[in-house]
Length: 106
Image (cartoon, rainbow, N blue to C red; front, side, top):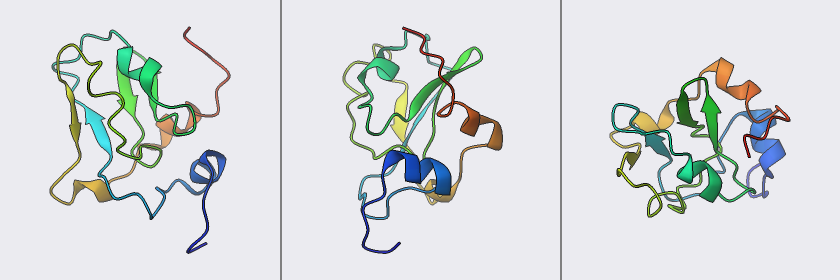
């Protein structure tokens, strides 16, 4: 699939990031998060990387382009880039049910 543009559905199916994305994916530090869901509402739908997972708000790194649209709306600055080689980490298996769900919290 090298050189092809992979859609969000394709990224879900393959469980991998678009290799063209230059920015690192983001993560939410749940120790600081106040669960306001502002980030979830500002994640562009063609990425759709942010979900409620139980009491937590999570970012699936394989769906996150690192576009930073969620950063300025976070009132507690708890969203950070995945750095130091951790960008190779993958979302846990149970998170992958979230993009397939029809549940819309709004």
